[in-house]
Length: 82
Image (cartoon, rainbow, N blue to C red; front, top):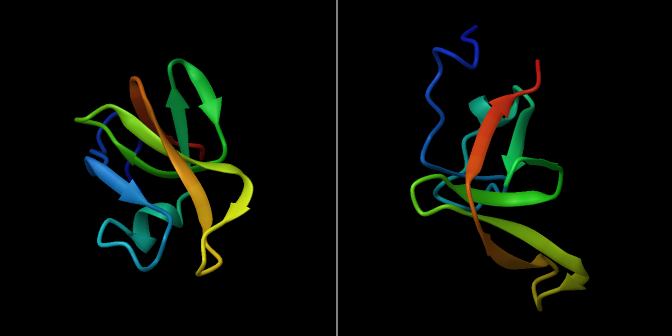
């Protein structure tokens, strides 16, 4: 397995299996996200180059039962927790 120093995370990653940015192999390794220097545990999707994360907006759901998300801008640092 690679460690954080040699592994390059994809520019964009999503936890939604229906998303084109979903990657089960990477997500199975317990990915953590630091956003503006703080650990975030509710990230649905991130983009490093554009500097944003999508987080669930409370318990609200859309008409398909998926959580509503909001996009928050700032520096994104993905890492493996293991």
